[in-house]
Length: 72
Image (cartoon, rainbow, N blue to C red; front, side, top):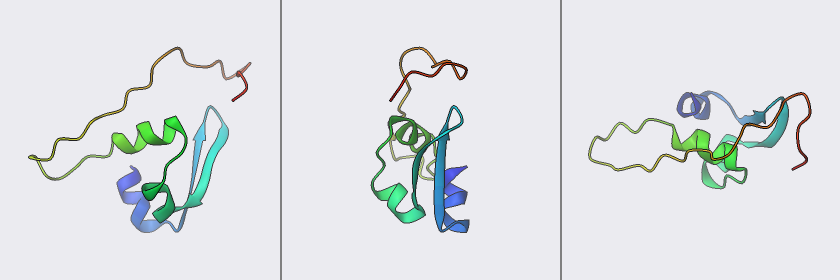
């Protein structure tokens, strides 16, 4: 749960299919996310305010093969 990790870690490393896609301080990750997978992960963090509408990012397309991943 990234909402908990934010408070117990100084640095966060985001991995996708066994590859590091982002590595930065926890503050920086929540302020300026770059990779689409990171954006999708952060959009899944629950918000305690029931009146706040949060848009969930759903990843589109097929999952890349972990055996033979496409570049990028």
